[in-house]
Amino acid sequence: MPQSLANLLVHLVFSTKNRERTLSMEIRPELYAYLGGILREMECPGLAIGGTDDHVHVLAVQSRKIAFCDLVEDVKRGSSRWIKTRGRDWFDFHWQAGYGAFSVSESNKEAVRTYIANQEHHHQRMTFQEEYRQFLEKHNIQYDEKYVWD
Image (cartoon, rainbow, N blue to C red; front, side):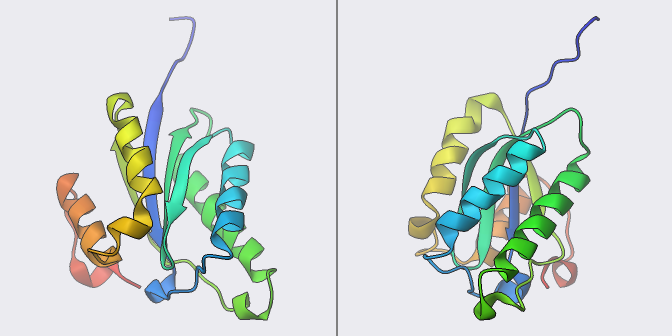
């Protein structure tokens, strides 16, 4: 086979440390744009980025050229460093240590985009923890509750 071809879509979810409600409406558009820039630099274009005051959802195309763990590390580290430059209120900002990553089929891409775009509405009915548990169960991921949250 002369070419290596792939279309790997991933739904990445991660929270602020201890789910602190620090992602204000004012900072989110800049944060999402910054996350999009990091993804572009890594050749993993962001298809949808959104969230609420305590967590972020990213739908991205996973590049064949980079390991997923490196992608997550660079996205979280780079955005955390950026947030800390936004002023005194952000000096102590941290993301949670972990993350959730879920595969998305091409046929489900638009549904995931819509889901990410409607996070504010969605979280009027459900907490981040409830949402995250549902993702883990839907994707058949075994977990121990005491290790999921930080």
